[in-house]
Image (tube, rainbow, N blue to C red; front, side, top):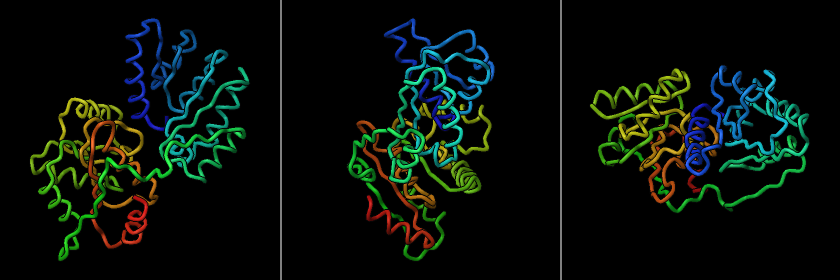
Length: 284
């Protein structure tokens, strides 16, 4: 998976299989000592980032019995420039055996990404479950603006006074905006957490632990939290500024309306996003 957060989440879900098979060995490959341990202690399932798998190969981990490799949020791996690393990883793994099945998973595989996959695995088969990836009957989308007020932060504050979320994720494009909104909510005595890539691993783990224990009503985050993360009970998502690519808005809004739940996705109006809002309005 592309991020440590996704690796942790996948690992915690896979642990549920242990109640059916106590002999199953599942390894979370997130630290150097675990890579070294894998050399002498093989595992049935390895959950890792691409870089840690490459490190495991270089350390001499034997992959001769590997049957399946899954790339989760595969389009994000491509967007983040991991094509070379993936090609290198596949080439080295295929030296062990040539019949390793490769699966690329994502909720947002568009044509450009699909063509990149074909360059990595020429005989790849595309399986599409939805005709319109932007359409989800469980999510209501809304643009929020004030007629006589041009300050998006003030609009956000007034929206938060109107809605009463069970759990709300507020997405911002920059770390500075995340910190600003977080401080604002904290000063108003809100139960709020913050998430961005410059936080230490320990801090990020603590945030997810508190989320899982229902200790937050609000999470303010960059798009680090928009991809693949399954945070239970998100009732509302707010975009304070839109991401450059429409596909990232899809992932933001997709944090709500999951499973049996319904949700709302709000975009705080800002004149500089008018064209993008118009495009999204036609898609959703």
